[in-house]
Image (cartoon, rainbow, N blue to C red; front, side):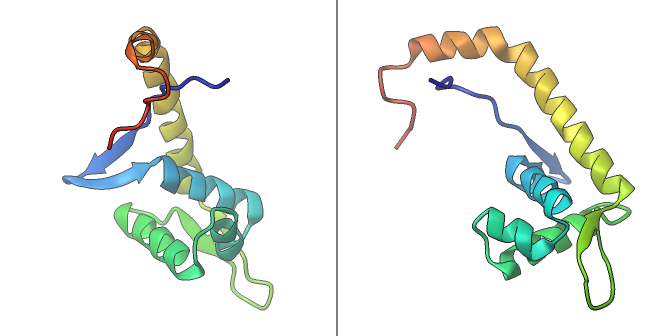
Length: 119
């Protein structure tokens, strides 16, 4: 059975949510599928929602994280900056999980059975 407690991270920029697990997973799916629409479908999102998220990520950084291939075949891919952002986020996530493992285990011990969600 997986642990009931896990750490999730959100990176804020200028007081607004910039990166979190969902956006990073979207970038990873895009890299895997080579397509904005396929990445969105894999995550259960509409093409419009997926495109808006990709566009917001591209606007947030100095250089785009996602680029598209022009032409009939189309497709999309992570830029070098996009690959770097995903890698850095995953490294931060891993470091934070390691640093907080004992405290998370203690929180898990304090949970009532089957009560992991708050109303």
